[in-house]
Structure formats: structure tokens, C-alpha cells
Amino acid sequence: MSRHDWSLAEIRAIHDTPLLELLHRAQGVHREHHPENRVQLCTLLSVKTGACSENCSYCPQSNHHDTKVEPERLLPVDEVLRAARKAREAGATRFCMGAAWREVRDGSQFDRVLEMVREVKALGLETCTTLGMVNATQARQLKEAGLDTYNHNIDTSREHYKRIITTRTFEERLTTIKNVRDAGISVCCGGIIGMGESIDDRCRMLRELATQTPHPESVPLNALVPVEGTPLADQPIIDPLELVRMIATARILMPHARVRLSAGRSQMNREAQILCLMAGANSIFYGEQLLTTPNPDQSFDQKLLADVGLLPLEPAV
Ligand code: SAM
Ligand code: DTB
Ligand code: SF4
View (cartoon, rainbow, N blue to C red):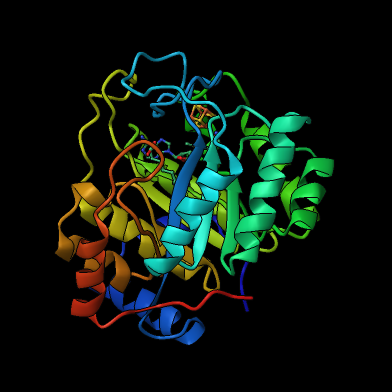
């Protein structure tokens, strides 16, 4: 009974509901559609770091900004496999490989990524990649290699987008998402808050996601991690309750989606993270590092799960 025709006014009304009522409603939707007390643990690895040609204002990996990120070539397959085995042993069920590319180019580098996907899949992990734009053929090749999910975010509203990135369009982002969807790969698509956007921009971003048919299977919601050297370095850290509201609203709009409490956890205390889980987040990044910025360490997360009584979600095979 998912809806795909949400209006901005409806979304804004949900978003602005008094907090306890909003949490109650989101919890109701969550319990109806998801196993209770389960959270998905995804581990990220940057397989190709920095020197990216795009100018995304939030991103420490763009070569338009002067940040402390050391560029690295595409990692060898065995190094990726070592990290994947470690993630599996620590309890992760999904392994997500990120490359700081504008787009995938055919050739030996892409072939190596396909090999990474095949081998990580063979370890019994769910596979995810985020490699920038892909065309229809490349998406099919990824699917054949065993890719479960592709992450490609819309990042913000269509209107705010132009103030954040000028080297590629919002439409191009949507085309990649369509190529991924058409290849039968599950879609992971979300965005960031805390980049100077209005509340209506946030609601427009959610409308963009919630009016897709089908909804993305997974929706990562990131709080901006302001990084020195990027144009957004001086943005104030958002109040975690703003992320709680976004998660709850996403949960209500897209009842079946996995909503991921993504970047920004290191800036939040334990209790704020628990409110995010209560609002309907059922997936987190697990491991000391996101792509280039820190994430809570595994012992912190294991204690968090134990304190709340959450169990890791089994991998879907
Ligand atoms: N290059 C690929 C792309 O842009 O699609 C994949 C990697 S990119 C780093 C993946 C996503 O990470 C971005 O779309 C953005 O939503 C998120 N991200 C990047 N830097 C961030 C930051 N400083 N704070 C929060 N989220 C961030
Ligand atoms: C997503 O939405 N968040 C993740 C994942 N998709 C690839 C990345 C967050 C990156 C945060 C900045 C960094 O560590 O470089
Ligand atoms: Fe490049 Fe992706 Fe960072 Fe944009 S978000 S600069 S495309 S790595």
C-alpha cells in the first residue's frame, strides 16, 4: 500500500508534526513493515580515493577543493577482500565499495571493480558499490557480477542542487538511478542535510525519492560532515533532532525502504542516535571509517546495539 503521489504540503505537514507524535507514527509504520529490533550493518570501503573531477561542495574528495585527503589509485582486489573478510568477521552483512569517480569508464579499472564485486559476493556478503554515473550496459555488467545494490544519491532538492554541484546535473543523477533500476539492481538513494538548504528543500528531496516507483530500497540520510578545505567547511553542525525528523518522515513516506542513519553519527551522542533508530532508521554504517571521515568505532556500536537490544539483520541471500 505504498503511495507514490505525495505532495510537498503533505510531506511538510508530516515533517512539522509535534515530535513525539511524529515518532509515534513513524514507529507504527516501522513495526508494521520491518522485523522488530533489527538493524542492518553495512561497512564502507573507499576503493579509489580523492582526485575526483566533480565539484560537490560537501565532498573532501573533489580536486576542486584543497583538503587533507591523500589521493589513492584503485586498490588491488586482494586488499579489498582482506577488508571485506574483516568486516564480515566483525558482523557486517553488507560491504559497500566507493570510488571517487565522476562516472565509470570501461576498461581495466572497471573490470577490476567487477572482480571485487564477484569475490565479495562469494564471501557471503551483500554487495554495494557507489562509483558515480553508470550507463545501462555497465549496470547490467555489475548485476551479472553479483551486485545487489548501487548507491547514487540525489543529495538535496532539485532547486538547491545547483548551489552544491555544477559539474553534473540533477537529471544525470536520475538517469543513473534509472539505469541501475532497469538492470535489476536494488537502489540506494538519499541525500544530505545541513548544507544551507531550507526545510522545504529537505521536504522536496524526500518528495523526489517518495514519488519514484518503486521507492528506493534503501534511503541513506546523511548529516553533513563539514570538512576543512571544502566550501561547506563552516556550515554549523545540524541539531540531531532535524535528522530525527527527516528519518521519521522518510519512514512514513517510504514504509518498505531501509532508512539508513548514515554520515554524521560521530557528531551525535548515543541518545540522539537512539532517537534516529526509534524514528525508523534500520541501517547504519559500521566500521571506524566512512569513506574518508571517521565513524563511531565498532566497540561503540556493539555497545549501542546491546544497550538498545538490537540484533544485526541477516544478509539477504
Ligand atoms: N563519487 C560517487 C558519487 O558521487 O556518486 C560516490 C561516492 S560519494 C562520496 C557518495 C555520497 O556520499 C555523496 O553522494 C554524498 O551524499 C555523501 N557525502 C560525501 N561527502 C559527504 C560529507 N562531507 N558529509 C555527508 N555526506 C557526504
Ligand atoms: C551515503 O549516502 N553516505 C556514504 C555512502 N552513501 C557512500 C558516504 C558518506 C561519506 C562521508 C564523507 C567521507 O567519509 O568521505
Ligand atoms: Fe566526486 Fe562523488 Fe565526491 Fe562528488 S561526491 S566530488 S562525485 S567523490
